[in-house]
Image (spheres, rainbow, N blue to C red):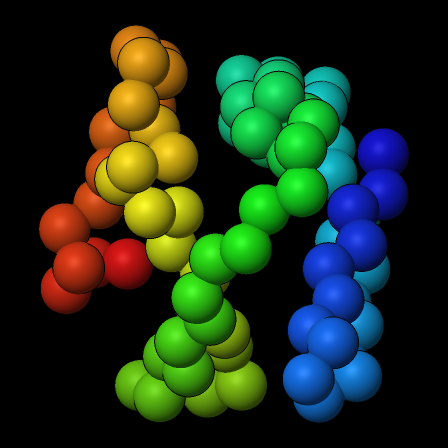
Length: 75
């Protein structure tokens, strides 16, 4: 299963290969979460190199008993 993430401002696109056989709960969550268009902030994770963190806003997790928001310092 392939996930495409695109930033319209920069034109940057990233493809991620999801592995449901390795992480079925995570893939199920992402599939359900991304069944509608989403806009989330992207943060440069400066201490880990070329990484972009896109923490899911807690408001998007309301009613999702299987998901909990990370504290901002861990996102």
